[in-house]
Structures are given as C-alpha cells and as structure tokens.
Length: 89
Image 1: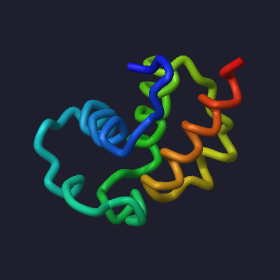
Image 2 (image 1 turned 135 degrees about the vertical axis):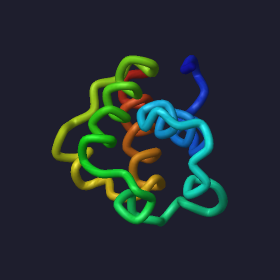
Image 3 (image 1 turned 90 degrees about the horizontal axis):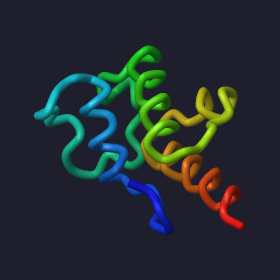
Image 4 (image 1 turned 120 degrees about the vertical axis):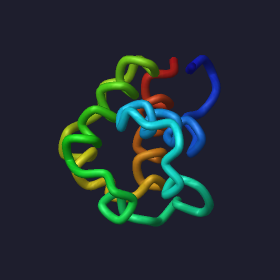
C-alpha cells in the first residue's frame, strides 16, 4: 500500500496477478520490465482491471490516454509514480 513509498514492479506483478485471478503466472517472473503486456498474456480488459485496482489501492487517478500508451510494465510503473509524485504536496 502507498504512503511515501513508490509503486514498484513487484507491486505491479501482485496487482496483475490479482486482476487476472491467478497466483502463479510464470510469465510475470524474471525481467519483464520492457516486455509488452500483450506478450505477457494481458489484454485490454485485464489491463483495465489492473488500472482500477491500482487507482483504488494507491488513491490515484490515471489518465486513460496515458494508460493506453503504457505498453510495458516499466512504462506503467513510471506512469503510476508520476501520478503519485504529482499528488504529493
């Protein structure tokens, strides 16, 4: 959960697993930072669920166009952290 900590790849992995309803998705192990979500098996519906969970759990509102442009875990983590730092006083 947030606080002053950044959103990490491990947070994203946990959220992706929860959104997919699976605990052991091997495609999320290893260096996935620059692997496109489609190659990881995540379609637009799974990413919408992921986004909803991130918004709820991290109290951020993510821009739909920016979300659509984030095609890799690295891009999505950076997007979430940009929103988190923008809302910090």
